[in-house]
Length: 340
Image 1 (tube, rainbow, N blue to C red):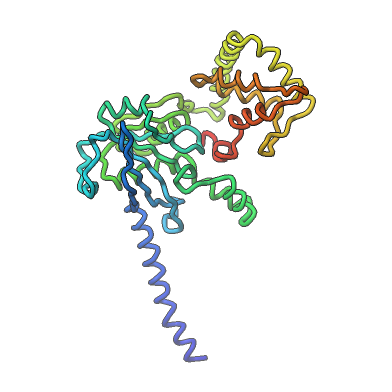
Image 2 (spheres, rainbow, N blue to C red):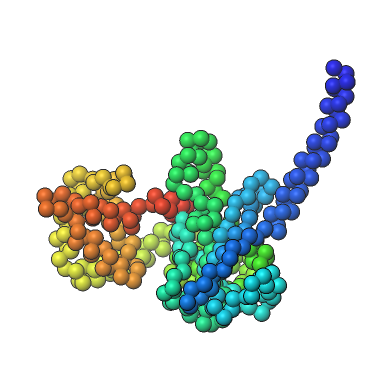
C-alpha cells in the first residue's frame, strides 16, 4: 500500500499538468478557428466555395466543446482563383459582404443558376458574398427538433435550455468575428435581414471596428431605454397590420366570407395538422405574417381558396399549406429564441 500510495502521489501532479496543457491547447486551438474548404462549385453566373469553421459552443468556456459553422462564399466566375491558389490570395484589397439571415432558426438561402436580385447586385458592385448558416441551422451544427427532443429526454429540460442559451445573437456575432479573423479580412460589410438586422445592431455594439458598413432590411430592435420597449413597438405596428388586412380584403373580397367560415369552424373544433399539431382560430390568424412579403397576399389567398373539401371539412391541402407557414418543426429556434 505504501508503494502504491507513493506512485499515486507521483502521478497526480503529472495528470494535473497534462490537463492544464490540454485546456490551454484547446483554448488556443479555438482562436485559430480551423477552416476546412471543399471544392469550388460553378454555376453559369457565379462560383461558390464552401467553408466550415470550428468555434466554441460557449465562448465563456472555449475549451469545453466546439461546434461547426458553415459559410458559402459566392463570387463572379472571373474571380475564381486557380486550383491550389486559394491559400495565397490576398484579401486586403477585396470587398466582402456577410449576409445575416432572418429567423432565427433558418439557414441562409441556397444559390441557384437563376440567382440574381441583391446577390447579383452585390457581385456587380465588386463584393464577394458570404452566406452564413447561423449556429444551429443548415450545415452548421444544427439544433434540430429531433436532436433537441432527444437531448431533453436524455439530459433533461434544464440542460437543454442551457444548451440553447448559446444560440443567441451575441454568439452569432462572435462566430462572425472568428470567421473574419480566420479568413484574414480586415473589415467587411453586413447585410442583415429581419432577425439578421437584430444581429447587425448587436454587431455594431459588440465589434464596430470590424465593420465597413451595416445594411439593415426590416430588422431594427427598439432603441429606447425602457423595460417594456417592445410594447410601444407593437402598438406602433398595429395600424400597419390593420392597413395590410384592408388591402388584402380589397384585393380578394370573396375571402371575407371564406375566412369567417374557417374561423367559425376552428372555434367550434380546432383541427389536427398533418404533422400532429393543432390549428386554432388564433393560429390561423398567424398567416398574416405573409402580408409583409412580396406575393404574400396571393400565397394566403390560394391557401384559403383550398380550405374546404366537398363534404364541408377542412381539406388536407389547406391544413398542410397553413402548417408550412406557421409550423416551426423545421426551425425550432424561431419558436424558442425569437428576437434573442
